[in-house]
Length: 195
Length: 430
Image 1 (tube, rainbow over the protein chains, first blue to last red):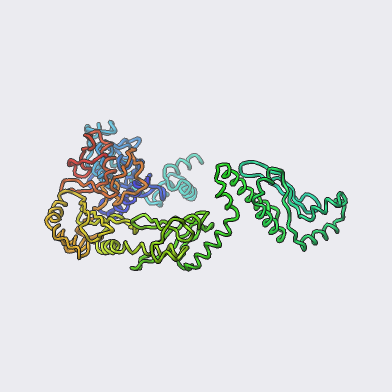
Image 2 (tube, rainbow over the protein chains, first blue to last red):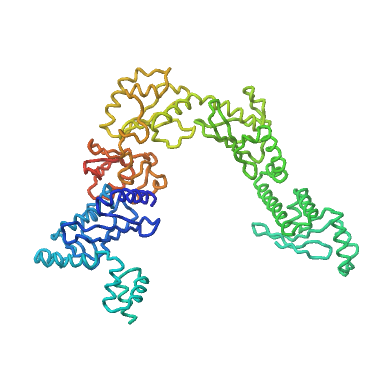
């Protein structure tokens, strides 16, 4: 719908202005398609998500801004209010507390705040929430491990080195990574199936 | 249809298929050849190629008019258009054109004939009689009239010369486009005129003999397009006063609506403060008299303006311009200019982020709410909380209220809360 596309466009411009300050950024998935975006959230410092960059899949419904944007974590994250399997998020403003006064940026900033202040009493992932309440230390360690494993964007060299260390020849690792667009796991799978 | 060079005498035979599916048998042949072939009978068919070439050559040189033969229905249909058919055949004979072209031309004539037949059956015989022969006469007449006017005044001419755009300048140098629509029966029937002027144009066509109309002034003696333009110019004079006032406002104030005014629009909506504007409408007869004023925006911001307006209205001075009067009545130094700081950066609607509601979004909005014709395209629905005073398009706010279960609906008003400050807000539904 033309109006809403205009609004999304405006929001993207606004968001780009203070990316550094807020630590959230939004990009179009496909050029010219304002219904599908990807957001990136910097893990808040002082939490077990520090140092991680979390990708969020954003779908703009046709009736936006009367309906909230549909958001889902693409990056795997260990958090009581986010499904560790699907990335589904439990946040009131993405559901019934949405208002047109909110924007994609404010929603992402709210997600960032949710990372620093989990809400275990209203969980999305019961298992994670139980661990958060019963064994805070284990939770801390798991969340940090998940952050380091899934949410750090390793440079290409590091990835190549890591796979080479597993005993694959370097040229094949580079080729596999190129074919899978740098997806480490997919490349590894490919190498294993080839072997 | 397919016209095939059938016989050795150079005739073309085939069927003509009209658009309505009717088919007619036709034979196109050179008139004198026809007679000859009757005379020589079968002998023609056996002639050598050499003879045929000679014959062809002779025919070319002779350039005799061809003749169209057809079945009884076709003959009857084309009888009124015989001149045109002969003309077409002759043209083709002279150019030795492609049979396909001839076919196209013949089809065109046939379509005309068929149309005439339909018109006749509807009892419009008179109009039909002109149809075929008219275009040429019509076009040459129009060209002559344009020449009298001067081609430099013509902005656009349609391919059939029935629609013209004429550029006309008024006394103050404003450029106007006069759209002239000429009927097929011009100049017997008057041309219809359209232009962006505040009142409907009913300039009589002066080109033709229009019985029963008395001449009004000296302009009337000039006929044709030039006469029309002169009369139009005359007419423009009556709007000079009101246009001068509007131009003055356009130049010195931020006009929110209309965005791109043409000369027919006599209202202006002028920004006064954040979410606060006044809409004025001028009259053609007395442009400088006290104008119709309507204040729009949040009550808190409007209050002072309204008070001043009521207090000072008596001092309105007809000798001064509307802008000067408005400024004095509203006790302003000047109108705020576009993007001025005091207006804030929140002129746009808090829901769709547009200042002007896009017209393409009007008919059906997200929640299927129908926009009302009276709805403003500007964010006029302002939150009454003076600390918030966020503006929304009535359509946008209504759509949002409709999606909330907590909205109350009483008569034609919806009560909900502001999407920004959550304070109470209402919007009319009708």
